[in-house]
Length: 503
Image 1 (cartoon, rainbow, N blue to C red):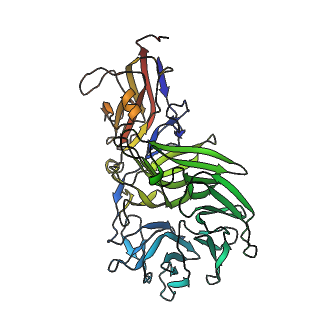
Image 2: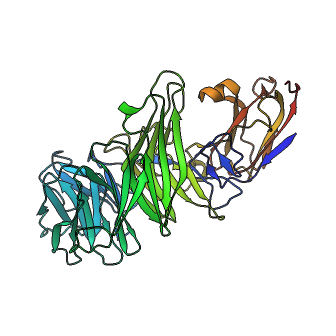
Image 3: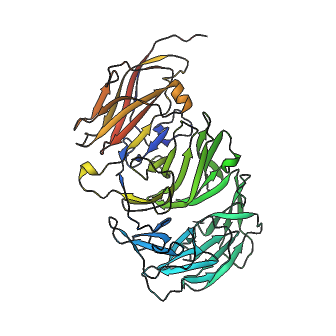
């Protein structure tokens, strides 16, 4: 039996045993949507210089440059804003942007050339051009919980700023401020998401104590003279932490397991879509296999749209020897209109990051804060091909049983197809079977490493490093690792049944 895979635009599947066309178990640091029949690796990343500024949130300004919210280099108790004048240059302090109190990283937004962020009991305002006349302590607002960023609604240009169970508004004149333009009647809820939705403002709310009993999305017509919202959507069980709008569809990402204290064996992230009705899009699960409690965490600072895709941050931690998934995730549509999920970018070439705390994309550059505030990386700006693709891009196949998990098969041969391999290109092919799959371990066996310049395929009938036979299996998974710019175009294998089914 020979099987071939030459389509990859299905992204990551919820069910590793599904027959999803173009799907995989894990897809990391590959572009699978631009060309549906190939996996194109992204550039590697390099450490970014911050000057110990504790940058903890990022955005792309209306001038097309990266800005970071952090603290003063000389006094970490003061908030400060930093600017990257060139993508390959260093971060520099924005003139006259200090604030005399500790900051809250969640709010970092721009309106009409001004940046806004929270510090203790104040909303801070800073001129993006560094003008000194701006009063940093712009508004006195007492808040307890800030769980999501503010947004500017495209219909009116008004800045909407959520805190606790309230929404403040700032008009386009930059001075007319209403601290309580909307108050959610039930104070047990806190606002965890905000996004434009047609003429409405969609507002995600969840219990302030992080109980996963259920979240809602409210649709508000932005009329502050009316105390009620237009509609309430029951978003179901889970803590809804990220809400955004892709092409007129609301996408919400919820932690279905709640806090780690309420998880024993399984934690799950749930992605749903709403456009007149609510439906499940994707689930990302982590299951305890040995002793360590699994954990799935959403970082709400990462929530933006770029290139028709929604970007967010998940940290998926498996039990003990189970692998973890960290990085900048995306969800978007393929050419057939299906939603595709992937860990689109890694934050470090060696996958040593423990979480992506903030991120921003401009052009082909990605800037990310990872692991802890002040630790940043950015896309490698090298021009020499050999130095560009320094990250390892990875694709793990779905679980393969050749039609029947009860039968024992022998792998006869396996081949990975590529575009002509560049001089620095490398493709590593690995497998794991049966028990290693069941335990979801990192115990993969290398079949071969191909570095032959200009080759468009490489196959093996044994373990090339030792000459050992390829495995027997009931179920098998393949892992393809790409470095140096190797573009993957297909995977095929041949197997034969070596025992008969018994009843």
